[in-house]
Length: 329
Image (cartoon, rainbow, N blue to C red):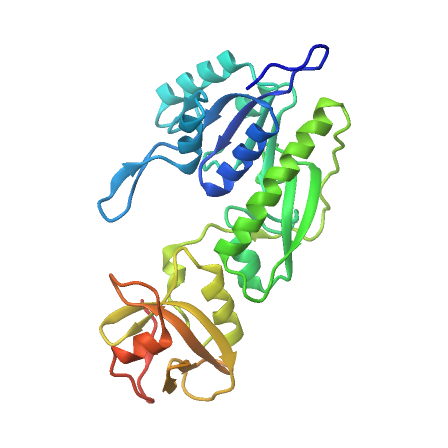
């Protein structure tokens, strides 16, 4: 990064904590805005792909590409399972001397010593309009619930779960076709722009804090793989939202004979039958009865295969009305 112009105030020194692509987009925005990124924290490498080889997080990949100082502690709690990691992370943070920490989908809880270390505290990029959807999965839960809007809240972190004061808020529409992936892409870009704006205001002493409203709080619990199994007794509209909310992870599933099939895309149509009963089969989709109305499934995936259209799926399967999708329990 080039030095500041003569007489200009140096940009804030930042520690950044994040792991997935959502966080990388924010780190990219801060780098592009010229902030002094003194340290990057991200989760340890995890097994990925068919070979289950250790792979770096998107945030680590960016840090390595740009020569940023990097730490990957397994814990930040000195009294936890990995006290050595916490001690090393503390040393790295003290050496970095950050004025503020930016946190985006990091995946580790920040203990009080981390919250207290930077003089401007820790700012979180949260993918909801707080206090709605505090917690781990705000994007998925908003789609699943049928919300028509989401957004980004830049929040001053405290010891609670997404309970800190709001600094900047910007809304974004949730479209009827949005999946968790498409909404996350838009919110990631918005989050990067908004946190850069927040830090610019902080540099000028103009960043204002607003306590969260006491009413309207909801909790977005972490997505559990067990939730993937479709309950066909639910309304078709609720199932259709879940398909989009669980795309790309963990994917909604139904059992068809001996196979567990992932169901990626569908639409609500008229239909009446026992929940899970296949009512119609065509190239346009597989119509399955639900608790109310029916779901026309238009994109599916067999185990070990790729996503295919209903026409491609039907061509390779002996499906006919009267057969059933079961819950994958």
